[in-house]
Image 1 (cartoon, helix red, strand yellow):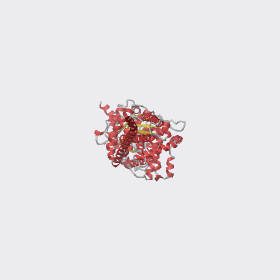
Image 2 (cartoon, rainbow, N blue to C red; image 1 turned 45 degrees about the vertical axis):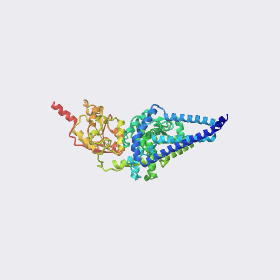
Image 3 (tube, rainbow, N blue to C red; image 1 turned 90 degrees about the vertical axis):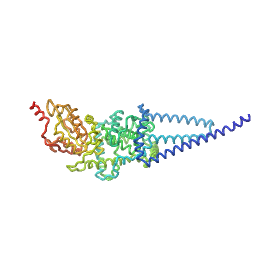
Image 4 (cartoon, one colour; image 1 turned 45 degrees about the horizontal axis):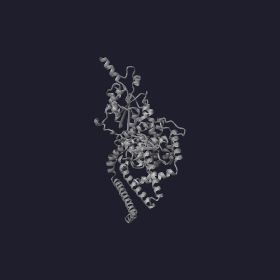
Amino acid sequence: MRLRGTFGRAAPALKNAASALLRSRRVVAGLALAGFALALQLLGSLSPQLVESLYSRGLFPHVARALSLPSGLFRFSLAELLLAALAVFAAVWLAWRVRGLCLRRVRAREFFASLFSGAFLLASAAVVLFMLVFGLNYQRAYLTESLQLVRREPNAAEAEAIARELLEGVNRNFEEGRAVINEEGGTVMPLSAEELYKVLREGFEGASMLGPPAAEGLAPPKPVYFSGLMSRLGISGVYSPLTAEPNYNRIQPAVSIPFSVAHEMAHQRGYARESEANFVAFLVCTGSADPYVRYSGYVGALGTLSVLRSLGPQRLRELYASLGTGPRADLRARSRFWARHLGRASALAESLNHVYLKANGVRSGVRNYNESAWLVVGFYLKRFGEAAPPPFAARPKNWHTPRRSLAMNPSDDRQKPDAASRVLDRNRLIARVAIARRNGARVVFANGCFDLLHVGHVRYLEAARGLGDLLVVGVNSDEQVRRLKGEGRPYVPARERAEVVASLRAVDLVTVFSEPTVAELLLAIRPDIHAKGTDYTEDSVPEREVVRSYGGRVQIVGDPKDHSSTEMLKAVNRES
C-alpha cells in the first residue's frame, strides 16, 4: 500500500518531466528545420544561376509534374478542399483540447506550451517543404538578366512608342475579339474554361523567348468555389505549391481572367516573383492565338503607362485619350467590382502578403506586382534596339535589318521543320508572328497564287526574305485563283501549293487566304513590309493604304516580270 502511494505521487511528476522533454524536442526540431530553411534560402540567394540551372530548370519541373498527378485528376481545386478540411480538423482538435483544459485534465501552462511548440514544429516543417517544392524559385536568376532586357528609362520617343503599342494593342484586340458587353458595362468571357486553358497552354509552348516549354502533365487551372471570399480579400488568383494548382477567382471581371490565369500558370512554371509572373502573363497573353486573350494581356500591362515619365503628364493624357470606348467601359466595370469588395479584410490580406514576399527575399513586398512595368519597358526597348526603330518613328525608305535566326537557323536545313508543319491557319499564324515579333523579328509579307512554281517566284520570295527576319507568304485559295485566272485553274490544290512554297529555303511561314484581297490578313499580322513583285509600283499596290495605316511600308522586289505560269503552260501546249 505504501509502495503504491509513493509511485502514485511520483507519476504526475514523471509525466510533467516527460511532457517538458517532449516539448523541448519539438522546439529543438523546429529550430533545426527553420535553420535549414534559412540556410537553403541564403545559399540560393548567393548562387542564383546555380538555382536557375539545378532547381528552377532542373528539379522543379519534375516536382511540379509529380504534384500535379493527384490534383490533375479533379476538375475542382484540390488545394481549396484540403484547406477547408484542414480548417475543420484544426477547429475540432482545438475544441477537444480546450474541453480537456476546462475539465482540468491538463494544466493551462502545459496546454499552451504544447500548443505553441507543436505549432512551431509544424510551421517549421511547412517552411522547409515549401522551400523544396517551390520557394527556391524566389532565388533564381532575375528575368531581366536571363532575357537580357534593357534596364534604363526610355526617352520621350521610346516612351511614346511603348504607350502606342499598348494602347493600340488594347483597342485592336477588343475590336477583333468582338466581345459581348454585360449589363454592368464589362465584357463577357467569349471562351469556355477549357478553351481558355488550351489557348494559354499553347501560348506558353510558343513563348520561345522564355526557353524550352514545360513538359505535359501539369495540373490545369482551377476556378475557386469560394471566389466571393477571394474577392473580399482582394485576391484574383493564388498558386498552391503543395498541389501545383493555379487557382483563380472565377467571379472577377472577365477582362482580368485570362491574365490572372496566365499569372498563376507562370508561378506553376517556376516564375515565383510577382513582377516576373505578371510579365510572363503579358508575353503569353499578347502572343496567344485568341484576340480576347491578347486584349486581356494588353489591359493587364496598362500599368506600364505610369512609369513612362519622359512623356510628361499632358502627353500621357493625350495618348490615353485614344483608348476606345469599349475598353474604357471594361476598365470602369473592373474598378467598380473591386471597389465593392475591397475593405479591411483585403487590407489585412495585403499586409500578410507583403510579409510573405519580403520573407522570400522580395525586398519591395507587394510593390513587386507593379514592378512588372519595368520588365515590359525593358522588353520593348530591347525589341526596338535589336529589330527596328520604335514604331511610328520615321524610317529611311531603304532601311532594313540583317537576316537573323529566330526559332531556327535558316542556314541549317536540318533545323527547319518540315514544309507541311509551316503551313498554318490564321489563328496559329497570328500567334507565331506575335511570338517572332516579341523576339525582335522584322516581319515581311508576300503573296501570290503560285500555281506552277517558276524561277520568277523563287527570286521574288528570296528578295522579300532579304528585307527582314521572318517571311510570311499568303497563298490564294482555289476559289480566288479560279476567279483571277479563269476556269480550269488552279492546276494544283491550295494546300499542295502552300506546302511547295513552304519548302523553299527563303520562306518561314505560309497560310492560305480566301478573301479577294490580302487586306484582312495584313491587318491581322501587321507585317513591317508588304513585298510585291515588279508588275506593281508602290503606288499601284491595292493594299498600300492598309499597310500605311498601321505604320508599315510597301516595297517592290524581284526580277522583271519575264516569267509566267500561264506562258509556261502555253509553251507546253504548243510543244504537245
